[in-house]
Structures are given as structure tokens and as C-alpha cells.
Image 1 (cartoon, rainbow, N blue to C red):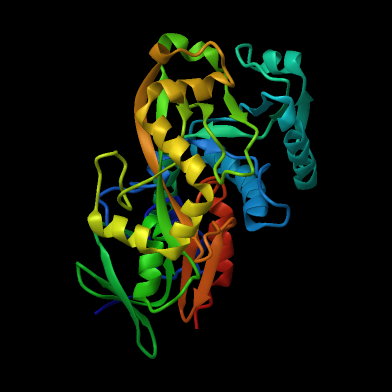
Image 2 (cartoon, rainbow, N blue to C red; image 1 turned 135 degrees about the vertical axis):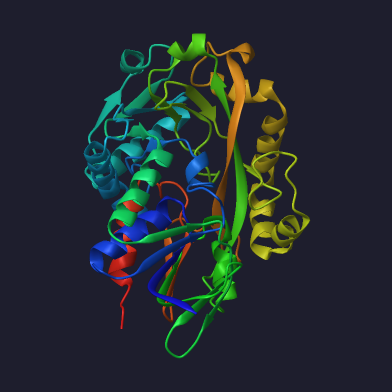
Length: 397
């Protein structure tokens, strides 16, 4: 049986950052990254919005807040060092109604608690940053930016291999079993024994945990986020990043505008239940995946609480007109003809049995295995900090 010191399951940005950090902590250790896809960053990392988040939304003291703020700075430095295109363009958060002002002020207080630079904006200030955006007040958060996360992953992979690590693509993990001295990772290419395993399986992370006989206290429920993009001759409607004030009654941020590193401007996402763990299209259905979600008591409780908002998201998924109306709250000049459908992503959201979404990164340690049980946005921004925290938790004995 092939053996190594450390195995990381998952070739997304968190798995690669973890492998890189393990090689930092244990120079000379044998580290192998496994991923079932033929390319890196094939799922959440390769389908996200490309935003370098500031951390303004996250509860002070949470892993998300700490890792996002520090991870933003470290990732910008990494991009500079490795010649990866990025831009720190800032983000405007816009209150479009007076009843949103208290929530906007709460975000300002949170930005202050995180030590983030921000400016309060009136209607004229909003127009200074974004001439086509209309609102009663806003915040400009300077440290938000954009980057190509697939390019970041390629750079992480290069560093891993330069330091002696291995990346094996097209290798599917089928099980995990512990022996007295090691953990055996069963794969469709044969078993691999390791002294320690880190599960960064993303959309499959809870299944991998259960395969190891471990309980992370939550299940993954996949939510598809669909995007439109502005046609090229209307990209001047948005200069950078434009977000609404989050609605606390809905567990997602709401549709927004994102200028991508290639110059395109994406609008979205909505949030609808995906009918497959890796279901990027409406027609993607895996009956076993869907049945697993519908049977899960945590999902049924979430659906019972948020069914009205969920129904509105589904309606917007099938109606370009409704999607356009939601975008007009921020940019009234947007027309249906300005939008064309583009990619969708699937968010691996961990849900607890009581129906509560896991609101923070979830790292669960077991016997010689560490499970990343929840790592949605801003995990890409925070990847270097998540990887370092995991590496600090791993003890090779």
C-alpha cells in the first residue's frame, strides 16, 4: 500500500491552501492532494464571483471575520508576489429605502469593530463612486477587491509541487478507515495510507465525514446561485462592486453587481435549491441527492421558516423580468435587454438538524482526521488563513 504523511482531500482553494500550509509547517513531509475531477477548482472555487471580501458582514470574533480580514491582506500579497491579476476597487453597499438605514448603520459599526476602512455616503457620494446607482445612503468599503480564483489555485498548486507535494487529479475517494497506526484513504485508484487526513471535500465533505464514522453536526445542502451579466456596451453602468443592505430575514446577501477581473460585470446570484450536489443547471437532477436533501429534517425546518423567500427566489430563477426588477433597485437604468445569462455556482451550505445554517467556518477534529464541515463564502478570500489554522491543528505523531 502506498503511504505518505498527510493527505488532503479536495483540490479547491481551501484544500490547496491547506496543503501549502502543511508543507510550511512540516517541511519535508510527504503531502498528497486528491481530487476526483480532472482539473483543479472544478466546483465552488471555479464558479464563484471572484470577490476579495473585506469581512464587513461577519460577526466580530467569528472565524469568518478574523480569517477574512487577515486572509484578504495575505491573498493580495500572494497575488502581487505571483503576478496574479487582481484589483482593489472597493465596494459600495447601498440602502435603497429609509427602513434599511438602521441595518446600514449596524454594518458601519461592524466595520469599525473589524478595523476596516470605510466611508459613509449620501446620495451624492454614492453617485461619485457609482454614477448609475441610486440610494438614500451607503457605505464604501475600500479593501474589497476582485481576483481570478482559478489562477490563484494554479499558483497554489505550483507552490505545493515546488515544495515536494503531489497533486493527484481524477482520483475519487470512496471511503476512509482507521487502523491502529494510520488512516487508510480508499480510492478508485487504490488505497493510500496516511498519518493524518484533512477533508476539504466541499460539496461532498459531510459524506466523507460520515464515511470516516465521524459526525460534524451538520449536513451539506446545495444551493444554486444563478447569474446574468451585462452586455458589453452596458458595462459602464457599474464601475466596481455594488451590493444591497442584507436582509436579516433571508440567509443570503441578495443580488448584486460584480465587476470581474476580465472586465465583465455579473449580476446575481439568486439562491435556489440545487437538485444535485453538483447541479449547475436547472436540468441537473440526481434523484439520490435530491431525496437526501428532502429527507433531511434540517432542510425541512429551514424550508418551513423561509418558504416565502424561497418561493420568490424560484420565481426569479424562471423569470428574467423578475430578476431584472430586483437589479433595478440598485441601478434603475438596467433593462432586460442589458442582461444575458452566464454561469451558475453551487454553494455547499451546512445545515444543522434544527434548520439553522452554520454561520461560521466549521472545522471538526477527530482521530487523525480533520473535517472542514462548512466553508462557503468568504472561504476563497480566507483560504490562506483557513489553511494555516488547519495546519496549526495537525499534529504528526
